Amino acid sequence: MLSAYPELVEFLPCKSPEAWVNWAIENQTLLLNDHAHCEKKAASTAMSLMYRYVDRDNLLHKMSRLAREELLHFEQVHKLMRKRGIAYEHLTASRYADGMRKHIRTHEPARLVDTLIIGAFVEARSCERFAILAPHLDEELSKFYISLLKSEARHFEDYLELAQEYANEAIDDRVAFFRELERQLITEPDVEFRVHSGPPSVN
Image (cartoon, rainbow, N blue to C red; front, side, top):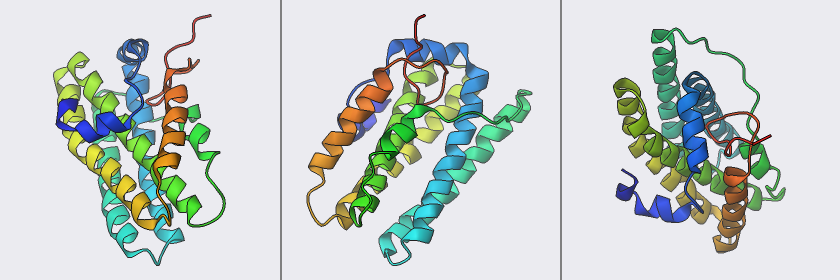
């Protein structure tokens, strides 16, 4: 499935660890719960960018569409959860997003560029994880995750294109910086399962 998105695969620093895949299969209730949170946060991020950067026309166009799609995805996950009798509960955030956002530069347009690059990694990793999980899930959930791939891949492209558009310099070094950081966050062990966690820690 990911062969249809070669640029996305090349963008990511590594594949998700097999131990994470097995962890996800064993924790599908938690997977759906955190997935719902991720979709809601993604919509919130897009809206936040629209409020902060009102003079960026292309950003307004792309983030408006992205926010609508992420909210639709939230509704779809939530509907699946209700159908399966899974309560939507508060969860602590994974260290993934915070681990990247703490390196965002504080001056503009560097702050915007870094935020957009991180958005590209979040969307690309989500797409990769949905693709590798789909073959291991029941038919309903598998079809749902496969249906998300196209939009998640486009969101990755939108974030990266916007980062390039609004930077006053080449972004290769910043992409490389966040790629290495993303690799560490994805491969280092975690104590709690999340959509963007690393593999389970072994005590």
